[in-house]
Image (tube, rainbow, N blue to C red; front, top):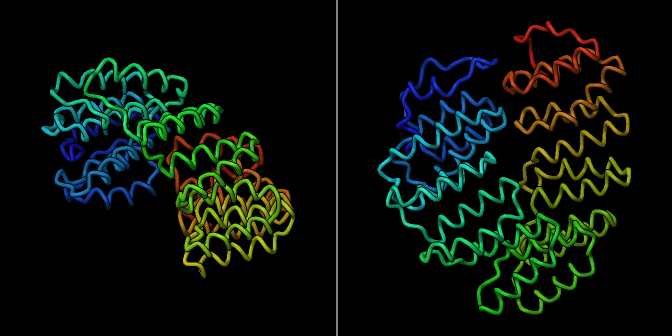
Length: 406
């Protein structure tokens, strides 16, 4: 992986003096891309993420893991608005001998998209000829994905039409059409996405479950429930095999009806041999919470382990929010501590609600412990909102950072 070729010189260049300590040493022990991906998921400090990424072996056996490791690193930098560092990191890969390999080059295009740097992504795409890198549906799909991830939904159809005309080697495949479908869905035009699906069927091109699920989800989100159910029934008659993700889209809509309807769909999944996942149970938990049935929601939370599932950040966010909304701040704090242990800490808005409640209930030590823990888990660049909250609540901002966390 080209990341391993980044020297200490590069890493020093990829640091800023604005609150982030510069990296002065780099471990020489190489790690696999798969292992790096796991570590990077838990690491939010951009400089530390760069250090981890630089130690990925150049001989990684997993191109997919290598791609995700790079994208995770780029995302950490993007959250801190370090776009010049992102450009330097990605451009450094163009010295790698594998730059002539289209999958390798496509990763660079896709990474620019992860940082919403679409102008850089399309420039990289147009420069492929300079490196004698072929252009096929692989790099075309990377460009469409970069456009989509940059939030330029309306530009995807334009690229879809223009690029195959400009480059004869590009022939859109089912993945290309799937990205086109998602662009229409994300822009709030699921009916147009259905037209593209019909076009695929007319060309005897397989409509992937992902594409169908994307359309279904957009229809539900736009309140077109009858059309969504009609489409579902149509696909059932055609013998389409649905996965858990497709069912979860229906469950997402059902949670607005009742917990009972959600449970019916979860049981239907099991009957069809599909295993409900954490997302399925999150929707059930949310349905109970919104009906004020917090005891039932907590049972769902506690039952995840029994179902051999692990809660995710959304699980903790939902439960903490609704416990706080019911004035049960101590219980919310207990759930927060569990999220810390699993490295699935909820977002700032949810935890702000919890801190304010703890202070109002004179649980100052718990409030300080929460903020102290968050400070340890995230880099200084993430702390501005927390510092402001501390001042507003009159909490001691000089709390010893080495004290025992929550």
